Image (cartoon, rainbow, N blue to C red; front, side, top):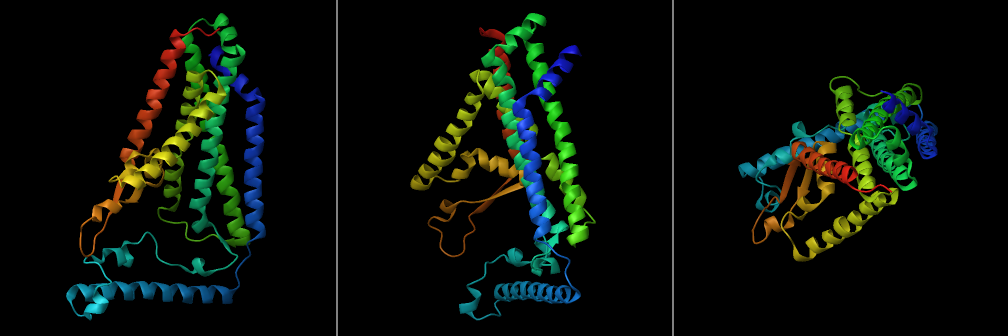
Length: 333
């Protein structure tokens, strides 16, 4: 318990952690103030006009769906029928994630129900960056300055010391994520109540936001940064590894995949599985699937969140085990 308390105090007193917290608060404040200044309470006339526009858009979607069904039944002229696929489910309004609503046609009006999801994704992205940088610097600075060696003199159990550091880091980030998310969404909910529209927040709205938050990669990013810095003995090692991967693999290999037209090339990218886990399903397109196919061809496919989570957990797990194995055996001087 004394070891965990000591690590908690060391983490809380680090200047880099305090700097990142200040940047976190500034980013939230700028976003909230910008939203507040750019929003207003809509007048009754604006609401009526927006409702009419949304109704017209929903009717247009229904008309397109009915025309597709007519094309499948063969009651449309051939020159019009060729514009529709044999499966009309893509045009079915009932299968859309959401139908057009009046808030979509209100200019300069912040609607909390519509903007909460993208705002939460922004928060998750910032916390992921926060977790990775803090995780890498927390252990990287101690390894490069000899702080870990001094700690081992007091508690000469390497795995216990490294485990306490990682556990303290993950616990602190979990607490920060909960508090920051509650304050962040609470501020924008108040903006929607006072200077915009709250929108439809019933049904599965709040559980959906909770699921997005749970899918945040804050702890995984922190563990990955911690492990990379432990393996490289420097904070810069973690930053260099991520930069090298992004440039060589995500950018370089993507160009090669496009040139050689590799089937399902997106399956080789880590960003694909990040997207699958964060959004619940990555929707991709394989141009090679329709090679040599005449007529309508759907080259789209999906990767689910289960596979995305499995890949991410495997990667972070391997890095973490490698970090603990290297820390246990190597010379720290």
